[in-house]
Image 1: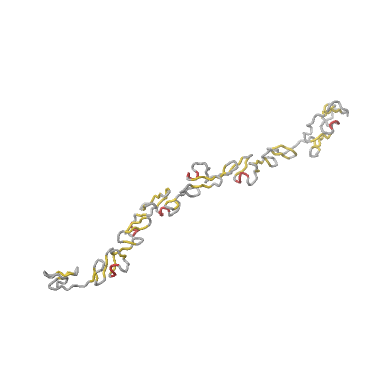
Image 2: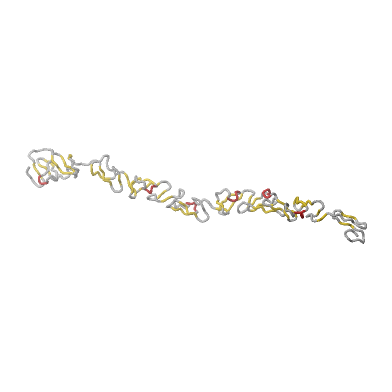
Length: 321
């Protein structure tokens, strides 16, 4: 084979459709037959992935002899380049056999901790967060479904901690959403708030049911609550005069309890307010008098109602003597 110029080789047989390596290229370049010459400058014949081995064949980088060392990735590299038969080299941020799996902030889409385990990596550095989370990496939490900067978050009675998703309630408010307050020390959502007789509409502000009154609705206008002998105030009966007991159910006689051993001077029974039923031989409002009939002298007359004598003129002693 004789040379006819730089990178040009001749061959005695014309119009052959196969290729030879040029003598001066030492099998490093391909020669293309053109008429009776081979153009040794056709460097891309083996697709840039091999060298011309002659007879229409290339010796490829992986050692395989093929027609042109062209690469094939089926069905293709979505976000990358084909670097070998069915072998993709992915662009930064993509992975998978076809380079079709994204990563989000350095974590693959199938990593259990991607998007802080609160969402899905749907494309490069893009998280689709679940409903209660937000942020580029779903790193923030909502408080009861509301963003931390929502004016109505935590019922406008506290601050939302976006890292924990919990409300920090202002003084006087309680509950996971700051939805609870107190009336007289009792939570507004408890059954016994406002003494069970009203509604706690704001801090220490009870709206009482019909028939009840007071700051905590403990007062009642129902007279039967205190045995018709007093009024209920703050859950305690305030008894009328001459009545006592938790429910004002007991009466007194002259300031002494009806069941006291000293009532009615220990000489009778207190049957009603200030009404002593005295034992035989005693009388008086408190049974304090002994029933001893006087004998009226000198024509005097006994007044039985008062046990006194009505004496004739000139006699002044009790028995008209």
